[in-house]
Structures are given as structure tokens and as C-alpha cells.
Amino acid sequence: MKSVDIAVIGAGPAGAATAIRAARSGASVVVFDKASYGRDKVCGDGLTPRAVGALNELKIDMSDAHYIEGLRMIANKTVRELAWPGTSRFPGHGAVWPRRRLDKALIDAADVAGAEVIWEIEALPVIDGDRVTGVDAGGERWNAGMVVAATGAPGKVARMLGATRVEGEPYGLAIRSYVESPRHDSRHLEATLTMRDHNGNSVPGYGWLFPAGDGTVNIGVGALSTMKGFKNLNLNALLDLYHSQVDESWQLGPYLEKPRAWRLPMSAVQRHGPGWVAIGDAAGLVNPMNGEGIDYGLESGMLAADLFLEDPASAPERYDVMVGELFDSFLRTGRRFSFLIGHPWILNAGLRLAVGTQAIANITLQVMGNLVDSKTPGTAGIVLKAADSVLAGLDPILRRTRA
Image 1 (cartoon, rainbow, N blue to C red):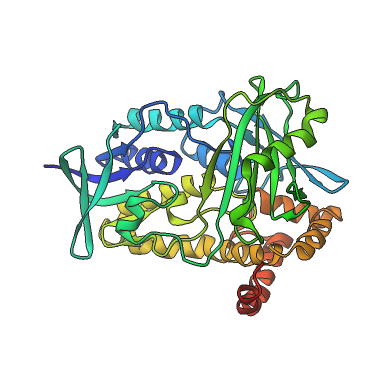
Image 2 (image 1 turned 60 degrees about the horizontal axis):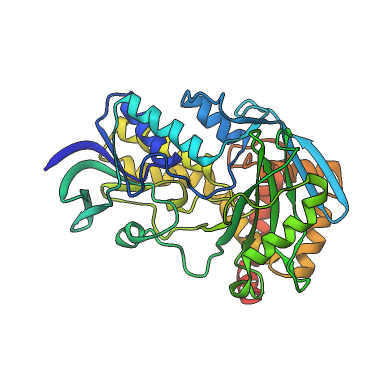
């Protein structure tokens, strides 16, 4: 039997952020992952300015990433190319960094900081009564002052801890591949907000082209579960359709690898308990309006480590409170909004509004860039707070009339 201060299950960005932060402050940390070192993770690869800010805070060398100046939003025939807004909290640029390289940079930093990283072993929480006391991994038991679930979309660990998706709440599905394009070095992400399937049905989601600067572009589409016929939606066909729509303007080559899909969790029944916390996707910290969660994963991972270092006994409960204060209102608004746009006529009207004027497009940009939370000043913060209040009253109706 071994003992550590923190045991992390999952070596993605969220888990690595916890390990880096804690190990650099002298805590003993072990990180487990079922995959092998250097594994790929299916993802859009886009980093918002918020994510770049978190990586800067962790002192991660980003010279290997492709610099992104802003976002090009397309809705019907309207095209708006907007620069990321620099703020006192976040830099005025994002990046595209394929996950194989991003995750390697982060876990390598955790290793350098002193964390022990163990690959190709499944770790499961040890539960004694109502408390998590450590993990079982590869036939060994590790006692831990706190166990951190950084396992992404809910699975076995989430079921054991009760950190599963809230039944009835929205979730997303996405699919991506890579293609070659002469525009691989573009400085803007591109998002097509008006998506339709082969039958002409409006899809609440978007298609994206994220230039990686290495000769390739990450191409993908995502959709929310609130649309009618979601369970019958063919993601491969939707991606093919999107590829054909943007082929000419981006001069796309064929898929360089088989398209891969993944689930986007957007809620969690629990994200903490005695002796444990869930962070990032495992805690449902995914923006329902863009499917992005790397930045929330990095921030929640650092927060969990900081609170443990301050007071291990109270860390899980304080973590849940602080994450709630920062993100819950915005994410709740996003989930409720997703019920609205599940109705095609509301979705189409909303998209015309979202990019209809420069002022509203700027707010849409902040939402798409995960730049809005409880600390956001200005128009965007005011609008989202008002939306939260209005949608709270409409919530029962939205659920009864969901598409």
C-alpha cells in the first residue's frame, strides 16, 4: 500500500493541471491513465483565449501551438470576422494545438514538477462508507488525501462516485477528422452556425474548421441532444455534408484519418464528496453553446489543487461552492438555451439575431470563446445575467415543449 496527497484519475488537460499545480507546491501526486503515453484524444483542438490564459498561468511553453487571432462566424449568408477581445483576465488571442501535442506538453510538465505518472493502468476509487480514501490500480492500493476524477465523459469512475450526467439535461455529440488545406495557417477559427442535415432539418450546433498551422485543418461538426430526431442523426453523413459545403473555399483534401466521434457531457449529478472532486468534463463543465471545455478543465484542476493545499479536509466542499459561483449560472443558462434552439424556427431566428449586428455579434463571440462567467463585466455579463433570470421562469415550459 502506498500513500500520496493527491491521486488523479486521468492524464488529460484537467488532470495534468491539478498535478502540475500541486506538485510544484510540494504535494505528492500520482496520475493514472488507461491509455499509453503520447495517446491522442478526439477533440476540436481549438483553444480559447481563456484556455491560453490558463496555460500561461501554468507556464506551459506554447511555441508548438498555432496562434489564432479571432473567430469567423457564418450564419446563412452573413459572415462576421471578429478579433478575440483582450481583457484584464484573458489574452487577446487563442490557439489551435492538436491534443496529442497539447496533452503531452501538459503531462510532461507534471512529470517535471515531480508528479508520478502511471500509464496503461485503470485506476478506480476506493470507497469506505461515504468517503473516498484512495484508488486501486494495477493490483496496488494507493491511499490519498484527495482523489481527483479527471476522466472526461462519464464512465465507470463517474458511476462509482455518482458523478453521472443529470437525466434529462442536454448533452452534445461531435465528430472530427483532419484534412490538408492551403489555408492551414489562417489566423482565424471558422464556425458555420447554420447547419442542416441531408433532409434539410436545422441542427442546433455548428461546423468548424480549425487551422493547425502544420499543413492540416481540424474539421468537425457538433450537435445538441435537444433537436428532434437527435438519436437518428448520422454524424458521419453530417460531416460529409459540411465537408462538401466548405470544400471549395478551403480547397480541402480528403480525410487524413477516419472521423471519430465523442460525447460532450454538460451536467453532473455530483462533482464532489468526502475525499474526492470531479473536474473538467467529468464535472459537466462544458459550454452548451460551443461544446468547449478545455479551459474549464484547466481552471477547475488548478482550483482543486489550490484548495487542497490550503486545507485538505475542506477542499472538496469549498471546490464545489467556488466552481458553482463561477460557472453554474452561465452553464445553466446555456443548457436552458439549448432547449430553445432545439426548435428549428427559434434556432433560425436566433442565428439571424446572433450575427445580425456588430454589437450582438461581439456578445456571441464572447459566448463562443468561453469569456463569460460570473465575473464578466460589461454588456455580455449583463445580457447573460438577464437571460438566466428570464430562462429560469421559462424552464418548466421549455422542458415540456422540448423538440
